[in-house]
Amino acid sequence: MDVPGIRQPIVIVLLLIAFFSAISGKPLDGLLMLLVAAGLAWEAARVSSREAAAAPPGGPGSLPQPGLSAAVPSAQVSRPLRGWQTATATAALVAGGVVYAVIVGSFTRFSWPATMAVVGLATLVVVIGWQGPLHPRPDPGPLPMPGTALWGGVLLAGGLWELAALAQQPSLDDTSYAHPTLSALTDPVLTGHFGRSLALAVWLLIGGYLVRR
Image (tube, rainbow, N blue to C red; front, side, top):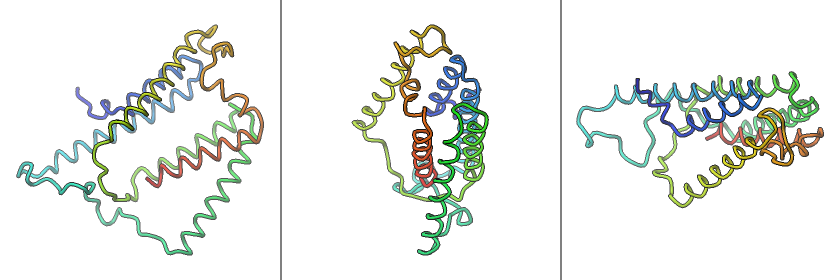
């Protein structure tokens, strides 16, 4: 059976991450990556089926005009907030993020409180944001080849580094600092409370940016 979502590059990457996380002694990380990959594949297949069903019968001449993304139902488009509402919401989110980073950063790494705090927040954001509201924006068109090749090379180099270091460890779930993985290189930063809180704050900022996109 052909599942269009499985062919998405991000889904393939997440499946590989899930596999290597599971065999390296991190089954929870692998399960989470697997769930995200399955969700993205399902959503891509659902959108593909919906677009195929709604495709106009008139051929290429009946396709939507280029430069704009697919039409978004007006009920799903978020209405812009007023200036003071935006400032208040932003201040509340920043304050909440700081409190969250400080509290969760105080938990021991890989402990159940830390794990549930991160997984719980991520799950909540995904559940709330999965159905919208959508933000219509111009179609950026094809990705520029130089930038795509550059970032693809960075990701490939990082993946090969991780795989080579993993293969040279005493065992898949035993870290060796003679051949450190990328996660092992972050250990000194994440040892203390400040480092963990800073990492969580960066994670929240990146997540907030992606949610707005």
